Amino acid sequence: MNWKEEFPLLSEKVLKPLNEIVDDCMGDADPACVASCPMHTNVKKYVNLIGEGKGKEAVEVIREKLFLPKTLGRICAHPCEENCKRNEVNSPLAVASLKRYAADNFDDPNNWDLDVAEDNDKKIAVIGAGPAGAQAALDLRREGYSVTVYDRLEVYGGMMRVGIPEYRLPRDIIDSEYSLLEKIGVEFKMGVEIGKDIDFNQLREDYDAVIVAVGKHQGRIDRSLENHDADGIYHAAEYLKEISLTQAFDGVGKKVAVIGGGDVAMDCARSSLRLAGVEEVHAVCLESTYDEMASSMHEINGALNEGVNFNLAYGTHKITIDKDGRVSGLELKECTTMFDKDGNFAPEFNENNKKALDVDTVIFAIGQGVDSSFDNEDVLTKRRNGTFECDPLTMQSASAENVFVAGDASGTAFIVVGAMAEGRRAAKSADRYLNAKDLKEGRVAEEEGSYTTKLDIPLDWDNLPKPERVHGQELDPKERIKSFDEVEFALSQELAEKEAERCLQCECRLCMGECVMLNDFCHSPKDLFAEVMTTGDIDPLIPYSCNMCSQCTIVCPNDFKIKDKFMKMRKEMVKNNNGKSPIKGHGAIEMHQFLGFSKLFNIAKPAKDKK
Image (cartoon, rainbow, N blue to C red):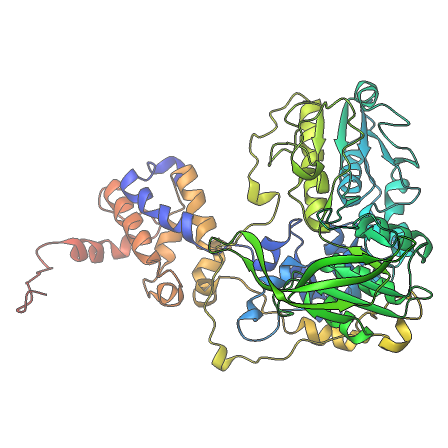
């Protein structure tokens, strides 16, 4: 007989105390970089591989989650870096730069995974060839679906292609990485506008399911201003789109003002400097300091280095025009505060402090919306800015069960990698829908998007090295504004490996470092006790292997008393085994157990001070 047949299951009295470890042990908790990534890329693993000089293996890890490593290595907003443990003392790990290093140097299309399941005779249409639509198409094609992507643009990438300047993201990178979808059989119909060339309802009838992943192609202009419709006034979406497609903009003048403080505004400002004929570029934003601006400091510094003139803490007061109806100037007024006492956006101005800019072109970068005009019969329930109502977990449309929404169209994805995660969720839901499965069963939000990890290990920074973040080289600002050539270079091998060494490889398995016994039986106490609670039993060898030294408790951030749990198991096993050890060969110590538990040989006296 084996121990499972010999001994009864552990009692509730023994099992219940294990809950605290199962619930709160951090042994299996992801590091912040992995939890923060909407696609849960294993940052810790691939960074470690880079540090070991294993670039090819690092790319393989990245591609387990991301089919756009070169793209994301350049333009990802890297939420992984925001929560990096090194932020506590200096700069976070340069995760995006390391991803780019690995992808640029070791990603080989000959090694791409081209496997797809057998065709299942079901068809799915995807509206939008941006990152959300592309990710959904990729995942669904791998599951054997016939997938067709429609986009009114003639080129791949959606807003990545026409919203992010070429000096940040070269177009051949997009085309190269998107070629994976063609290789596995995704069909693209570019230059086709749904709602115009093909009716949306007809598309729903022709396909078993539809993924709506249209981007934010509608810009915004402050129409409260007089002369807002004058010649020379444009919104960021149309401005960046034309520049992205032609490296020019018909109608731009010599002196440009860009209104807004976000990354899109910086893209407009820096792109303007590269246009033929432009002599001056001004950035105008309500924020009073660079730190308060919505844009990343990296983009702000890029604009400053290239010669953009910043007008901080100013808002637009008046647009002046010449006799031909062309912008001739911009009058600004000081912004004294942006928010009211409740934190709502409610800017106030000092009308007595104004200044004028001599400009002939004004670009508004104050927000963008989704063009929902393809849904000309209002099949889908809409939110503000043209986005669509959908379930936040499954991405299923609130009003059409065979339609799923992702990316900009959902109104909840604000960065490229976030849009990809929504595309993946939408694909998973469409697959379940078409196989008559429950869309939500077994799904947890934190497993399909960013979340806050419970891993929180205090570090003794006084005794830890604090190397500074490395930075790659860039083109000289005076030279780079003469073209749309890529500004930043990939890290060298030396710098990449040096930066990778800064990774702390965050995890909480301190107890495993102290206990030889635990390493023989589990990855972490949580894994061990979760299995015990599930099955109700445990091999007696495990609790009897504990020597009750308490070293695990001493190093545990949560002070879990693991030995106490094992001792209760041992006592119950002895009790259930007629006072004998459950371990074969322990007969020699039965007398010791008898004496140890005997009241005759154990006398307890209260302390004199009653403590």
